[in-house]
Length: 332
Image (tube, rainbow, N blue to C red):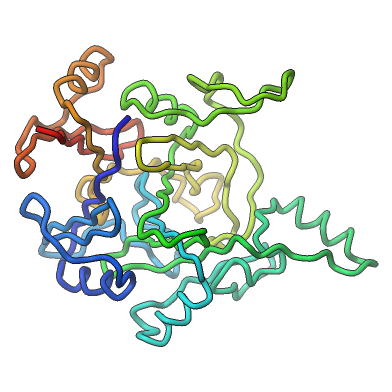
C-alpha cells in the first residue's frame, strides 16, 4: 500500500506558516523537502510553494466553509489532552489561534470551542436523534454525557482548516477528511487505482468481520444532517468513506453545499485543487513504474510527469472530484 507523504500548500508567506505550525506543534520541526520549505510532524510533511497573492479556497469564517470548495476538507491532529491544548494556544495568541465555534444543534447560535462541551458530549447525533433524546429527557434526569471524544477547529495562516481530535497519543497528523460527490464510489476508485484498502464490515448473517473489495452499490442516498458540527446548518455525515494505506486512513463525506444548504446559487460541484490553498496531497510508493503501468491499464490519465522530486521521481494525477494527487517514488 502507499504511504501518505505530504500536503502541499500555496502560501504568500511560507515562513509565517512554518512559525505558526512550530507554535501549534512544538514537537515538529522546520525542514526542507525536495527544495521546498516544509514542516515535519511524525512521518507527514506540510510543504510550501510561495505565491504572489492569497490562493483561492481559504476557509471563510463567516460562511463556515472554504471558498471555492475543493475535495480537500481538513488536516487533523490527535491530542491526548484537548483541554490543555486549547488553553496553551489561547494563552499564546488568541487571535492567531482563534478556535472556530462548534455547533451542538440547529438551535445553537453561539457554539462551543470543543465538541465535548456540547450537551451531547462526544456523541454524533442526527437532528432526529437529538429530538428523540430531548423527548426522553423531558420528564427524566438527563443521561450521563460521554466525553472521551473531543474535537475542534482552527484555521492556519493560509486558510487551511485544521482539526484536532482527542487521541490516546499525540500525533501531528492523525487523519484527513475530504469531500466527494459520491464518497463510496470515490473509495472504490482509491482501492482500485491506488492500492488502498476498504475497511472490513460485519457480515449480517455470521456476525463476523469480512473483507470488502468494493462498495456495491456505491451511489447511495444521502442521510440526515448531524451535530456537533462547525457548520451551523449541521453536517451531512452519511455516507462516509474510509480508506486505509500504510501509515493511516482517510475519511470523506458528501459535498455539503447541496439542496440550498449554503445559500442560493451555491449548489456547485467541487472545484479542482490545483492552484488552491491546498494544491495537492502526496502518496509515496516503492516503485513508480509499477504504479504508472497500472494507471495506464486502468485508464487513469497522468496529468504531469514523470518529473524529478528531489532525488526521486513523481507524477501527478487527479481523483474523481479533482483532488490532485502527487505519487512519489521512494526507495531508489
